[in-house]
Image (cartoon, rainbow, N blue to C red; front, side, top):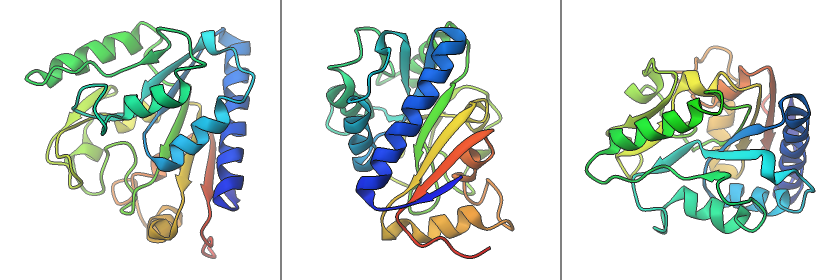
Length: 227
């Protein structure tokens, strides 16, 4: 499903879509696993989401990707999530990526173990496309998008600073039932065209991963090109 609108309309719509998916998931299995990125657009969605009446005590929130920095660092995605949702999510429901500066693989192992203890996959994914069509820390025509793991991974030599990151892998994201992907701002127009170009693959435009999910919504404030 492709939805066009203004930034304000789309952040409201994204929050509504996520809230509905969360409620439906919890109704079926008594909990939901939501994966989220960072960024300005996402912060606006979080502000709308926390206004929803949700069973927050049954919603686990993981990071879709993270910079390898302490959780209180200004560049930390977890810091943004905590600032926006920490007042509604009970303790233990926001899951930070464990930060071990000299042992990033230890952090990945612990994060994978935590997710595995909750079923090993996401139910719902929120993603925001970069100008190049990347989502999470999976970049076009880069080893990160080709990593065969079905787990969290460490990404080396990312083309966008910082070079070292943690990310959910392509296969892990594709196990989700519901996905929302954002293309907000004129800088994302080319990425949107690539996402809708049937001649391009996920390797060329990782944002297409979300469009492979059973229930996906693509939200944009840009003109949608004709097929």
